[in-house]
Length: 312
Length: 312
Image (cartoon, rainbow over all chains, first blue to last red; front, top):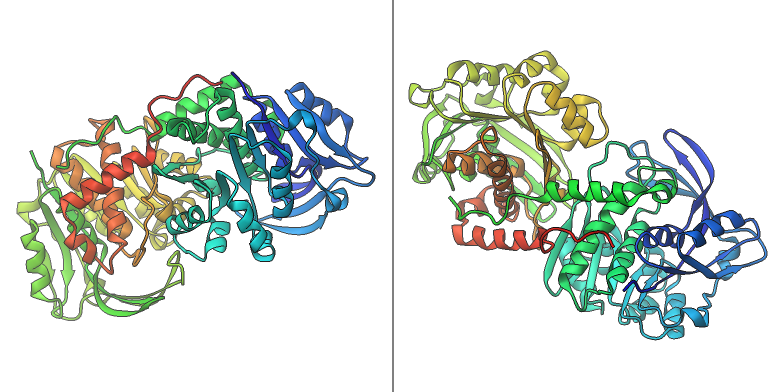
């Protein structure tokens, strides 16, 4: 039985300076990427804010994918805009300008119809707002939260309070080190788990992602691409797809170790398509058959023919 | 039936400036690391050169591990010495000084008793010398070669000639990009394979290693460590263990796809121990039982409970 995924976070336009050209007004925002990815698998409920410049056609396209947009607030003013510049090999980026616009006053309001969503993704927003979302919903079966360096440095106490209330933290490697002061990922993950979350997912971009939980460590390599076009939103696509896959099966990591690991493989593969396109365009055009084909390639990529033999 | 691995390359002393202290006269050299690792699995034949300052006790220790040192040349003068300085997080290093010493005139002489070794590791030396080794031996069943940026830039033609005669190239990610001009690893690997080697192993340090061959791609993540002490020689330990494991089973990638992949997993795990110690000390003390235990942890780390389910 497919269950609902509630996603709260930013919706944006991005101006992207890529090594191969500059692209303006690219659809962006963590919640956007996550919702598009999750909706491949499960019905999604979206909470965010857009300005009066946000095209109705985009919202309509989301609706057609099974994303409930009744929680998307329409505010007077402009939509959040991020202007970024990527390095030549796309392995790093700098922020040229951030215009929060209507996002500056964003206070997530969870519609009554959303209150009993079994799966919740708290996108990277102020941890006080993430806590406020938790206060507005019935305790979901699984809560995944993202965060960023800004909150680690400026809102430490609030972030710590949040961490005590979430099941899974999804965080990148630098942030994990920043949050814990630990240089080794494994120790950083242990330290984060000691702060509350039962599971920690550390995202390493082109180097894959690792899950640390009661069962130990699970590592999923990133699928090696022939074309990398735009890494924006890859972590959000990953998190959205992860919850979408779990929700589609009505499973969570608390009940099922295998479900979480398999969902990570699928989510990583979804994200690998996402970065092949500019903005979310490849995600929007992705067919189940293409995803299934790449999943078979992924399985071959990590298979070594069963259990290892006894040591020679 | 355990077969012999012939290893040709540098033997050295390293002066290591680590973030936690400076260490002089640390045993080093690509062939040293490779031979120590390979000898965990198979008998090894070693060809290199040492100066009159090289301690007989070290050579004796090698002999006791099943390493035939009759091909180690004793030259007048000092042993090759590398002085390196590591960054605070050990993710990069710079060369402070290289004193080639007796290594400057190294011309590998393969003893008659070594000529029919089924497995050959051509450590990173001048490609003309690597070719010279190939000319001195009966065609081995499997030839693995390493190289470096210096030869890519200064000895391109000779390197290309070498590549046409080896089965497997073991190379790090930056070198692969350098050699081919391709920014995406997958394309770089394809380009290297087009130059001759049937298989390419791209080493990514803390991010693992990938094998590209006729069967596609195989990826082995690095085991996440709690302690990283010294990455020196990790790639050499990997290559040595890879050949040692294959030789111990009398298998090669040309006959057996699974053997190569399983050997990569074991070799990566051996290398993960190596970097926990300073120089090769952890490799020298490594017991089969510790290796077996970490291999079980590795298997758990990449296992997601069998084939993926149909997409939800």
